[in-house]
Structure formats: C-alpha cells, structure tokens
Image (tube, rainbow, N blue to C red; front, side, top):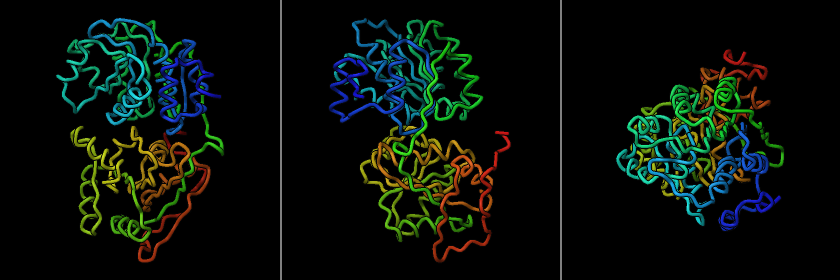
Amino acid sequence: MSFSALKLAEPILKALSELKYSQPTAIQEQAIPAILAGKDLIAAAQTGTGKTASFVLPILHMFNTERKLRGKRIRALILVPTRELAVQVEKSIAAYSQYLSLSSMAMYGGADAEEQKQRLIGGIDILIATPGRLLDMAHQRALHFDELEVLVLDEADRMLDMGFIGDINKIIERLPEQRQTLLFSATISDEVRTLAKRSINNPVEISIKPDAGSAPKIDQWLVTVDKDTKSALLSHLIKELAWDQALIFIETKQGAAKLVSQLEKRGIAAECIHGDRTQSNREKILSDFKSGSIRFLVATGVAARGLDIQNLSRVVNYDLPDQVEDYIHRIGRTGRAGASGEAVSFVAKDNFRNLCAIESHLGHVITRKEFDGFAVRKAVPVSILNYVPKNKR
C-alpha cells in the first residue's frame, strides 16, 4: 500500500515523498483510515513502528481547511510524558506539514513560560504539551479548550508510570465532550484501560505485534558484573570492542555525573542528561550526540522516550531497570526503521528478579558474555523464564 492509497491531502504526500517515506507501516495502515473516519482509537504499538505519523498525518489532513483560529484556542492537543518527546513530535509535525498553513507548538516545563504565553495568544492548531505545564497555562487562562477537536494521549503507559494520572484527569475534565480521542501506548495495562474507559467512547482497538520481518534487529546480550566494577567494565568494553557510540542508561542524576567523571579519568569523553539540566542545555547535548560530536551519552530514564536518533549503534543498560516496559523502551532507541542495533545490559546479583521478569516477557534467555579480568564475586543465577512480578499476578 502507498500513502496515496490512504487518501491523504496532496501537500502531505509531497512532504512524505521528500522525506523518503515509501509506504505506511502496519500501525499507520490501520490507524490512519480509522482516524480519518472520525473514530476514537486505542492503539498498542512498540517504539519505532511509526506511531507518531499514524496520528499526526490524519490530523493534518483533517485540519487542511480554511479556518481562522480564535485567540488562545487550540484545535488538537497531544499530551506527552516528557519534554524530549514533545520536541520530537513537534519536529515531525513541522516536517509533515511543511506545505500546509498550520501552526504547531511544543510546550513543556523548564522553558520560558512568558514566551509560550505569547505564542498562544494568536491560537495554535496543534499543541504538544506535557501535563504539568499545560495545567499551569490553563490555570493562568493563557489558553482555552472550548474549540478543541482532537485529543491524543501519546505514550499513555509512560505518563501513568510517571504519576501524571491526576493531571490527565484534570485536563480531560476541561475538554469538550464532543471530541475525537486517540490513545497510543506501547503496553495496554489495566491502568491504561481504566484511563481509556474514562476518556474514550466506543474506540476502535489496534494492536501491532512485530512479525519476524518487521521486528527491530537488536542484538541483545548481557554481562554479569559486581556493582563496584561496572564503570571499569564499561570503559573496557568501549575500548576493547571499539564502540563508536552508545546511549547509556543509569538510574540517578548523581550516578550519571559520577559515571561521566569516571569515564573521563580513563580517557573517554562523555556527557550526561537528566531532569535538572536546562532544556536548552539538553537540546544542545542531544544535538551534539546525534551529530556524532558526542559519542557517549549517559542518560537517566527521563530520556528513555522521545529520543529519535537515526542509526544509533547501541544502548547500554548500565543500571537494569525495575520495570520490563522501561527495558523495552530503552532498547527501542536502537534498531529503528529497519536498521540493526545492539542492546547491552549490566546485571548484578541484586538485579536477578528484574532479569527474570525481562526474560519472561521476551520469552527467551538473553545471551551472556564474559570478559577477561571481570569475573564476578557474586554469581547471577540462570533466569526463571516463567517468573511473574508480584504486581502482575
């Protein structure tokens, strides 16, 4: 199927052609017609499946009509969990709508609120926002929702994981009942379904499970390690395996800064991003990482979503995450759009339960590798593939 078969407006097709988009992905093929038909939607799709275009393209098509915006009004609201994802979605909208006369804006905390207020004065067709900053603006009467036509809850599972359910409910209470609501999530948990029941009417449900041909080509392997030798092991792998690039996930901002310092002492230049860094600083670091001028980036979970880096060679779980979903999202930063990638995890004995849960979800044991000079003192047992975390029982 071609994008033209989806009956999208010619200016959108022109932009897609210039972006070298040849044919829709599975989620786009199913979601776009349903959205164009005015249906509410619940869609489950993993990172890297073309999810953003699946809701942005039909919204652009539906908004491709002459209409004068009233001040401080918006036509579509896309709620996202992080500022990185807000920026990324807005960039996609700008690319897809380059031949349309539509306005878009990313709004999030950590940026100049007065500048955002000024942009809202004339009205915005498509607003991408994090829940906290959106509520702040609503409380200050910097925007109104009475002309809203479409609500998108993007990465709903992550927003709930981050504790945004209260803010989301407050936002939904302010919206017109007559609207189209689209929910996208990597996983459809009980919490996500509860949110959907409160906010969506008679939705179409789509679930995209990658088949062997379309699944990301990610080589997953792990190294068992004692906690006090992790930074030395990372330095060893970077040098001995001649890694060109790595996005390295760590749990805390203090740990991120410490790891950057430890790497630098071993002659490896690295940078880190976390929630305390200013937005402009984070954007500069991410830009440098994408361009290759920064080769090794240490990131806390705040950057696990919303990063879209073409041809990212590998991700490293320096700290194994507590949640299976976080592991899936992290490794989804590599092996995107048909490219191959590598996901490396450091696993200490204390991580055994997390490893069991991850491997049970994957349905197979992750390959283990050993490296001379890094024999562990505390052995990590072989996983229990039928392990079920307590909160899932």
